Image (cartoon, rainbow over all chains, first blue to last red; front, side, top):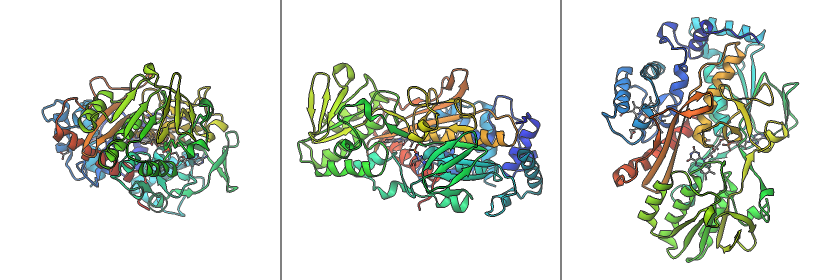
Length: 107
Length: 427
Ligand SMILES: Cc1cc2nc3c(=O)[nH]c(=O)nc-3n(C[C@H](O)[C@H](O)[C@H](O)COP(=O)(O)OP(=O)(O)OC[C@H]3O[C@@H](n4cnc5c(N)ncnc54)[C@H](O)[C@@H]3O)c2cc1C
């Protein structure tokens, strides 16, 4: 099997989620794709962040607010039951990529 | 090569903004790459769904004998009387109708890794470019004298969902007040490390209000268990001394079972129960064994970034059956592993190098209906395997008050509703 790196990678993943290329943040080499990072939030927050119940809905929250919330959880300036433990698992660049993806996919 | 055509298609489609058109039934382009998924549980159904999400051009076939999937998660709540079996049972209509997955309700009986085909008990042959296997667990009955499939009808393990769970439920309902319920968990590794202790909690909740003179005896093959301090804190609060835990070092390990006599036999003692819930040692499900995917211990070694078997090329294994070092065998872990695997398979089929993996796991447990606790982790791939990122994750704090515990009990229900909605449909 032929393997090609990077250039095509961004193209195909933009195509796979049906997004314009310009909307993709520049990905650091060791960072997972935004749609994969965000998919790890959906087991609690629901597919694409659309929640059925008690866990807050992420769909519809602007990226800037998602980022602010996650940074506050990460720095413990906002205390909750579980998000402090989770937010500490992500770099600032990952938080930004996740937030932008969640905003975009719900537009 | 098919993969190259596929990529060109995607690029054109992406430019035209019409990718989703490829997801429509009957619109599969000639030579679309084919992925077969064996098992429609937490891992397999997630993989099927996210494959279509990451690349709608892939033809995905899901092979799962059951038309309805009753989850193990929240089955303890059913034992506790706070959840119906129907409410934890799901179907595959969403995968078939919304995600354009071909759903085949048959059992896979053979994998030919040379010819790249799967055969089923219905007589079908399904060719694949890549195969994903998430078949869950089977029991190592041979490890416990006196315990086998027939004995499990008398002393249910209730560790694989469905009829066994109902049997255990009915036995607990039928027993007299003052009886002993034995829960006997296995040694590591096994499916759902906190599961037996949540089960003891939920049975205690039922007994407390219905058969208050009864007792629960946990005969453990281990000397410590998941979320132990949090469970013990909650047990003391809600159930007094109703639950007694005997560790391996205190002669807790069950070495044989007399199922007809509802008796668990340890090295030095015989414990007679009214209800005996014996949970045997486990291994990967039969299809993983017959396909040569398991190591000597009965679990499937994989390449961590892609979940491709290190034993059989072209076959990816995830969920409970796989050895995913440091991740527990949980439904939530299977769900996030499946997303990594789906992304990697989509990459490989398109001729791309697989991207960086990322997984998480959270296990919520209910100690009482409004007393929830959790353990969570955000994993990175290191050269030793998946490891929780330093400084993140961990347990709910000890010593928290009822407000915090009630919030986590509500979030546990929120998690359940959302993860099942991320995977299946109500019908
Ligand atoms: C009491 C209990 C409580 C639990 N609670 C939680 C919890 O709160 N949170 C959590 O995250 N996890 C929990 N778990 C663990 C969770 O159930 C498992 O980790 C999860 O189901 C693993 O997913 P899987 O895809 O590996 O296997 P499964 O979900 O078991 O799916 C395997 C599927 O493969 C199918 N299959 C098997 N062989 C074949 C074949 N030959 N052909 C076709 N199909 C086949 C089976 O029919 C089955 O549907 C709990 C488990 C138990 C027992």
